[in-house]
Image (tube, rainbow, N blue to C red):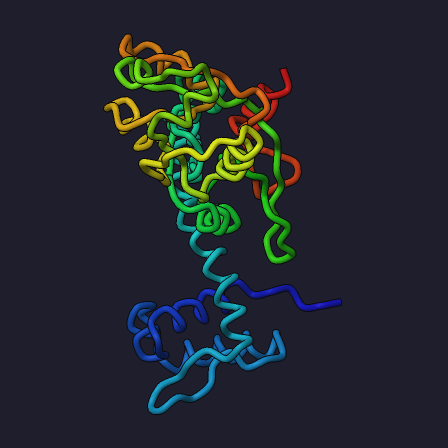
Length: 295
């Protein structure tokens, strides 16, 4: 039977690695250097591997130390969140929901996806937008409760991530009235006459749009490509060209009386996913999002 890990020893090791040496760690911990060194040696003995090695006048992490540090970082960063989490729960300040928003996800759709969780007045929503891979790393470190994306979690044996389909919506094409008046042909042939704005290949739906154009025999004049879907819609609304958006965005887009629906492409579908770091979801708001998608 293996010896249980001594988390006090692990904490001393973590501080030494963070501070870059025994002396600075001892100063931060307000302890004698010899005491800190002895605690780290005790951890090394219990694990059976050296975690530090000499380097010049100092020490650096061994390969085993790098692996231990990566996990220790997760453990103690989570530990630093405990006081705030307990205080919020005890004082009834609300339910915190930290969501990562993939930069390929249409922003006009985000509120639609999050709406089931926003119906609780106690919700304190924190949204972080970033690249998909960075968000998955933050999720694996439990810095986020969930990630919303236009693609499922990739298979990765080093990350325990679980995907949940939230739904799908067909795409449609929009343009300001002054742009749509230039069309001489019906939709979709008119897209061969107009400047077109598209998401970059950052977005999963871009490949489907390219394939759709090819099936239609169209070679559009691409006037702009955008990683951020909100920017794409903003430039489209300004008159730069026709642009695609999810049908879930239709009501909001057409609230602008200058906008026109050119046509729908039900064969081009955008998929939406929630990714969690746990197979059985315990966070009540994340569970609410997944359950709402089933109805």
